[in-house]
Amino acid sequence: MGVLSNKNIVIGVCSSIAAYKAIELVAKLKKLGANVNVIMTDNAVKLVDPNEFKKASGNDVSIGLFHPNVDYRYYLKNKK
Figure 1 (cartoon, rainbow, N blue to C red):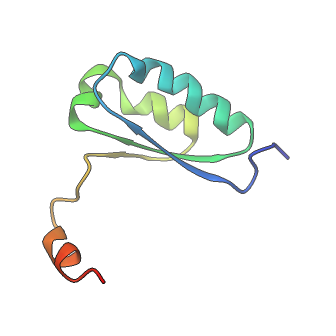
Figure 2 (tube, rainbow, N blue to C red):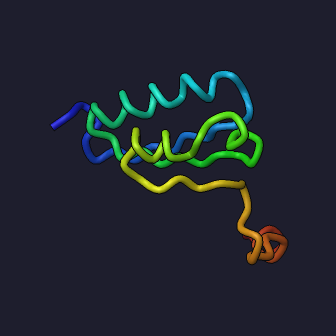
Figure 3 (cartoon, rainbow, N blue to C red):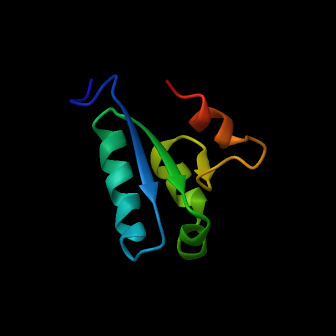
């Protein structure tokens, strides 16, 4: 059991040279026992292959910040 066992971590990757370093970070967090999920912006995908993050995290990678079939205005308007 790692120091981060049973911890869920989400890493957001945007279009920066740091995206390459984020792969190492994800791998290290995974090695410590964390469940790591990665979300990438459309521009980040132009710099780094999402499959690199999939290999490092063991999880599928989400691309884009918003799902195209969801009307987020409803959630924002009805938020209490």
